[in-house]
Image (tube, rainbow, N blue to C red; front, side, top):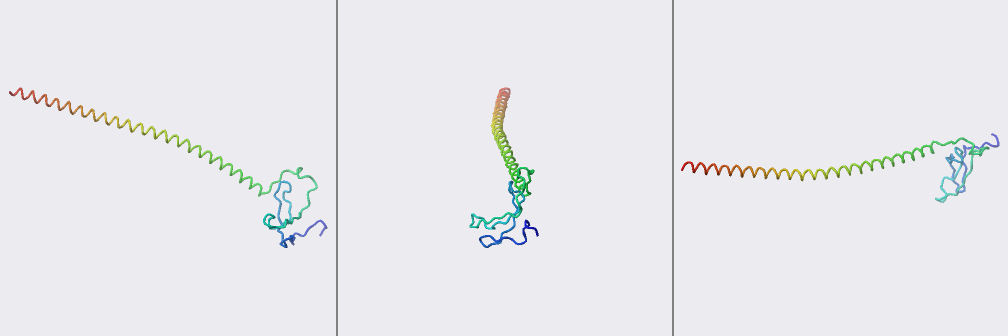
Length: 151
């Protein structure tokens, strides 16, 4: 074993006396670098133990082509999905508002048509009543004429 190689079969012990899991960095500045770190988050009372396993690259990270871990890609895809869903929600809400306006217009037209229908029915009733009065008047006139013709 060379002096630069590290046995990762045996995990480090942190200051909390816990075995540290081997992890892989997903940060843009250290993509893919492995490290041991305390498994208890510092905010939950962990000791903050940390040790890199992989050596720092000899050239600047900025000289590497941008490497993204599958986790970072999935995260970005999730953000894109979220953005697409937000846009779809806006589109659906806009369509709903448009349909609500059309429904309101249709309801107003329906009310106007019902009022027109009532008016037409009332006019028909009046016309029938006038016709009935005319027929009755003609019958009375014919009856009176018939009576006078008989006398």
